[in-house]
Image (cartoon, rainbow, N blue to C red; front, side, top):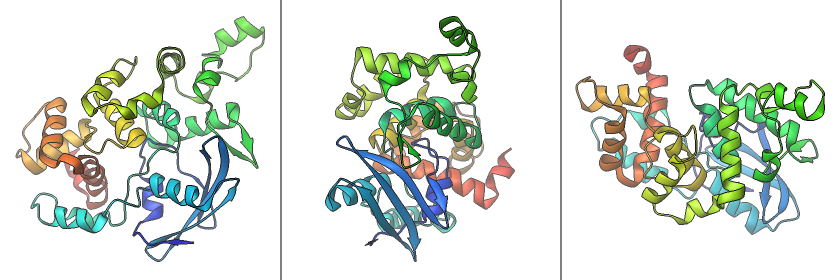
Length: 300
């Protein structure tokens, strides 16, 4: 079926958003496992002109499937209205030309997004996406060679490193988090899984106000403001989040502050106040505009 909403599927998939690794791609078709009300289904999406061609297999209704694929690719967001907004902002007017069809790649699993975002800190897109894919293969459930991400309870039982694995099993294997290449982040991931399996329900985050959700996520060890905003934007749809790191700082400084040195926390505040409900999308477009236009090389 064709979903009449413009998208650049490949750009959205490879844009490094921390909701999840890119889906498996074969012959232009991106596929992955999606869990809906406890039922697992395989979603298949491909580019058809400027729209999305979609089919699925699994014991769910067509309405459920369409609702979820629209959520994952944010297909109800009005890109054309957003482009009008960009075009009317002098500092942003070039961005839609370089990033046309780029959409938020929303989490199909909020816990996977949480761990992915922690994994992405001070890490390359290639490395963190491989780490998450390795975790799915090692500890997820297998459905026709597609793997779910392990849930909080399963995650709690994963060995931290070789030392802990050897201590508890008297064996030296690679059945531990650090074997997935996450390094020091392994401890943060375990703490996160413990918090959201033993202390509170992760789904409660989506019921909070942005400020309450932000402060709650910041209590997770290893989660700073940028990672917290990634979790809120990609995992829970808080569009007012403006994930800010050194690159966004440089871009915002160049576009709005004549290249002056400003603190990352001030950049975050500026982005949220200046762009409102478009903040998350503007941040996404800023980063990819800087990469594609050559601005990033200029700012190094």
